[in-house]
Picture (spheres, rainbow, N blue to C red):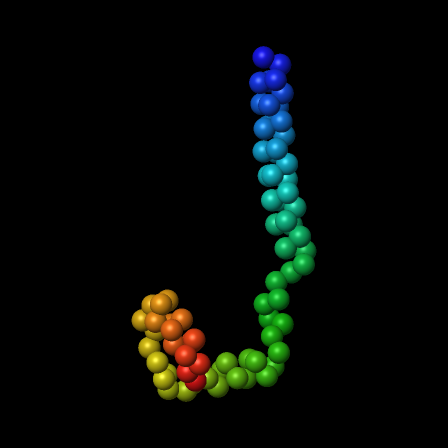
Length: 74
């Protein structure tokens, strides 16, 4: 009986520790900050230029997209 009680207590502590670790990880991500808005100017210019170009392909799903990317199409 004592073993079952000990197991229950340990499981309860593990559950609490998992929750605490999850909260700590979440807080660290918030402290570290999001890199959003810190893009290189060259990258932003390139993306904006490409966004104005006529598309050369049409997205038809993940499988066809991966096949397209793997062929090295540009």
